[in-house]
Amino acid sequence: MKTQKSTINILMSFLVATTFSTAAFAMAKKPINTGDGGSNAGTTPPPPTSTPPPVVREPAAISDSITPEGFDVFREVSYPVGGIVDTTYKTYRELLPVRNAQEAYRTDSCDTTLDRNDRFADRIAYAVELKMQPSKAQLGYVASYFGLNKDVNTYLPNSLISHPLCTVTSGTLETTLNGKNLPSESTVKKINEFANRMNSYRRDALTGNREGYVKASKLWSKFMMCLSYMESLTTADSAKAQKVAEKYAPTGYRRPAGVNFYEDPNQPAESRLNIGLFQFTPDSGGNIQSCIREWNVLYPKCGISTSASQAEMIRVLGSSLQTFNAFCAAAKVTGMFGVQVNSVKAYNTHPYNVKSDGSLKAPTERCVSPHMAVGRSYNHFGPFQNTSGFTLENIMSCTMTGEY
Image 1 (cartoon, helix red, strand yellow):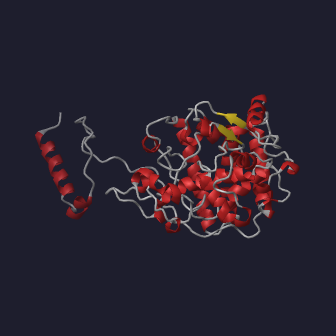
Image 2 (cartoon, helix red, strand yellow):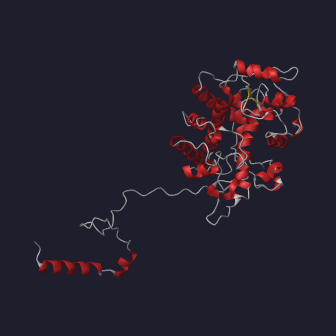
């Protein structure tokens, strides 16, 4: 047993040690109480064995093109990426076959850059490249639904690479998806892997790194090509697709190979018919009007009427080369981002864009996300909202499989 004298000596030593440096004591962290009352009570934990990685601050938005000189989207993106996705869907292999240009419609020939690039992969990758260039979302006609100014000239231009992607959590998805169809933990992990990888490529591209830009283009193209399989390419040449096409075909029109026609029984009559790579309804006054408006800005001499007939829109959306269909898909993504960037309402942007006092970050400081419910952002694609409970997982798995 310890004697009383030794106990006093120990206490005196303790007092000397604690008063040795008043300044050091004042700056020390409060001791952690282990709660066990034993010899370790009141001691500080050992220092961490590794330093946590620094928080990456994403560069602010850009409003200029950063496409590197000499970039060839067909050689560097569409063919290699199309091959990877076709291998994933090797039973179908729809992206790389050369399509019949003799069955093309006039909207397939509006851009001479596309001449002799007649694969679906070419048209999708080129649409992505067009939307890597900043432009103003043509959403003034539906501005009141999304907290936007009716004057599109007031919008900050945006693109697929202008703003960083928001990472997500179960909490942010609960908000942005209105508490419905929440993806699994494994899907959330893949979403964040995609966002983090894209943001890394974006940071590199903004420094002038050519490889960063090419990788960003390839990853976005792969994402959209995987979506095209989920939307239409696994059933494009089925007997059912042919039957629906024959039901609606205008005089002189015949469904080209690879172009899906689908009737959605869950939709009202005016939006029941869905056509092509990304399944759009041939209603010029419907939700493709924003795409028509953006197309007409880009191709004023090869425009599409905002009051075009259903017969005309079937030809446009159901063309053999799918140029407008692919363009509209990419435009839908940047339009959705355009809402999140330019809205003045917290409801219509990602929670990360809302400050602690409830005010919104400046448009140049915001991040964007594809995973927003209809009404919150201008979202056309059900898979981005996980509406069926498995499509989002399939798209993300496809996108993150193989080279990217």
